[in-house]
Length: 83
Image (cartoon, rainbow, N blue to C red; front, side, top):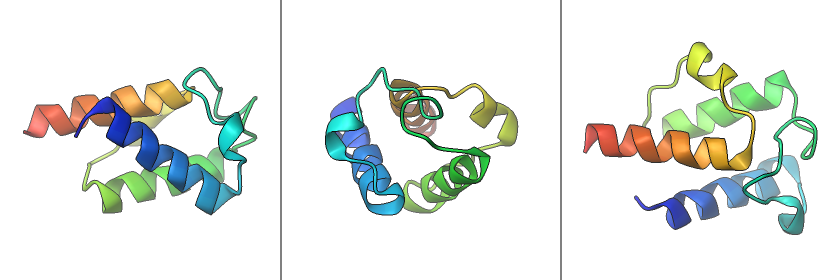
């Protein structure tokens, strides 16, 4: 799975699940300050990553994620580590 594919998956998830306008979802966008997510939304995102991409995500890893690009990089590293 490449960065672009992961970015598109994350963007689609944010648009569909959180009703965030697509134009607001940029790599540098902060999940909490810019996109208005909260801790419950972060857990929702974790659940999506675990089910859609079949990743094991722990809370400590999730705490380090702040931007859309952080999510993409995290997923990319996890997918490539198991490949």
